[in-house]
Length: 258
Image 1 (cartoon, rainbow, N blue to C red):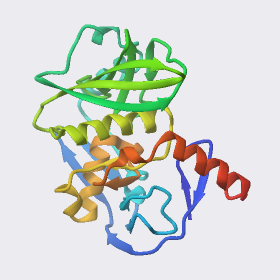
Image 2 (tube, rainbow, N blue to C red; image 1 turned 90 degrees about the vertical axis):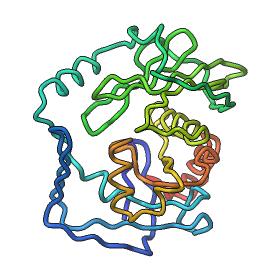
Image 3 (tube, rainbow, N blue to C red; image 1 turned 135 degrees about the vertical axis):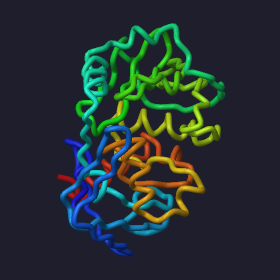
């Protein structure tokens, strides 16, 4: 079975440890927003970090059968209008803003990158994508695509062809992560998956990973939409851009990529 994770590559996995959930239809409604799928079953697969089929080096739950088949709709015209307006924004309205009730976390995340153009650097192409990312004056602004809520502001610098995240200002909204490590992992995931378009595990809490796979999938889709493919409670920052490139080169040489 193939993983269609980007327009660039496909990785072959051999599936095992399958947990099945059967539904005629699934509809999850909240505040005039509904998630719908026509699939009759979902396959959730656990991989240990040392499994041969697992390229990420950490324990993961494959939830793609759920997240890649969900469709989001809303009867609230304000939500649809807000999404359309934000999709055309360059993010200037966030330049002098901080996330509400924010906390500041120092970090040192590094990525291979020579520079970033000012303005919108990632815009959600559809309502199943939950984030916009903007760049202004040495700051990344991570914004929810439906509401326009500024969740994270990351202070960055460039050094020797590397992009470095120096600190993160993050909302302390009770519905968001409040653990510093999880906040760092989320920002790291958003950059790798949205800006650099890398297939990479997304973070979930130690509490959430103990839930049944369907609940993990629903929560992950709510947070990351179709960018959520593999859930992990381990340190997802260890899967770096360099490791990704090394895997691409190695598998290309073996003609495992198409």
